Image (cartoon, rainbow, N blue to C red):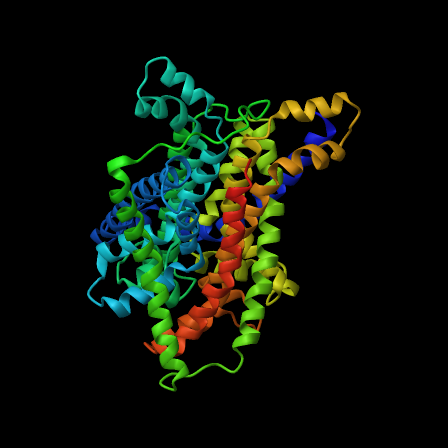
Length: 505
């Protein structure tokens, strides 16, 4: 192992160690309960109910997002779909609408839509872009030559896709599904509004009583076990098949597949997805915003300052997460082994914990061991990095997987050494993935709620905090301006993601 690789490995180990800091608080608290008390608590019918609810939500939402996201990506990128560019934009636009804002909209439109059905619907509509984005980007770059060869050998169009395209989509599909699963395990706002109890909502209730209570830590340990299961399943689903190739293959797009009689069903499907995921929340927020501007609600005089504070935290959190993810993603791609795989999996663990658990753990550690960083921006940025590192890691991992290592070796053979090879060869190839990771993290940070409530320095307010404060009091008109600004701030970031798909050639 070269000195450069050892240096990258040291940084990746440090990042992994930082991400498990919350576990140093959660796991000892859970262990302190003792085996008898832990068994008595965890084997209650209530825990079985929470496990069933959480499992049901993951089992329904993850496949639903994979199906919706993959089918939408295929229609947009590989068929002669009318107005494909417009649909591409509309299918990415739900990323600009925070999940709990969608829940707020649906609660006001259909108050009876609660429980499991409401939770599964809202999370599917909010999270399918996590699958659509990487699959669409990869479909746009795949060389159509393999698919055409398969058809020339007698395979039908469908069989050619199954044999040549779907296997190469596995990294995008598994990565997107993993992000959805981790978000579901840690989701709070949507589930609280839908009145659907899972481990996350139960943990919030336990920690509201007191962090010294070991019950919350025991529940958090159950979430960690579910996270390990999700990581294992994703590892199996991803496989080891190589995606990168030396050379870009045919310098042309695949010939669009004529939809024929399927054109109308395809358009109806996309219309339904966009209407439910985008039109309902946007029009509902607009309606409540009009009421606020008409005087039936009130506008916060400090709305602009709150927006600037949110934007600043989003940029800092995204930069920190991308920088922290890069060493581990590079190490896993270039020197895949059991150790590097363990490092990557470790960085995903804490992200399955609700923000309140991560926030309270960092508060405990800061007060006990690093009091000067308590109530600082640095501590809240650290929380964002721990929570949203998987978003950056999945994106960078996919980008590096498509960047052939042979190009770096060729550059070194021509005299480039050390960081120059990475900067001049690898960075241009993975720049779209870096941008994607940055945007995905920034979108998440801009709408994060529970950890921000605990860790934000005194006097700091964010749009998510202000929105939740008003929505919790059922003052929907007062909450609407904060929801509208969150959506407006997310639109430019979503447009960057669209541009990344279009330029991924």
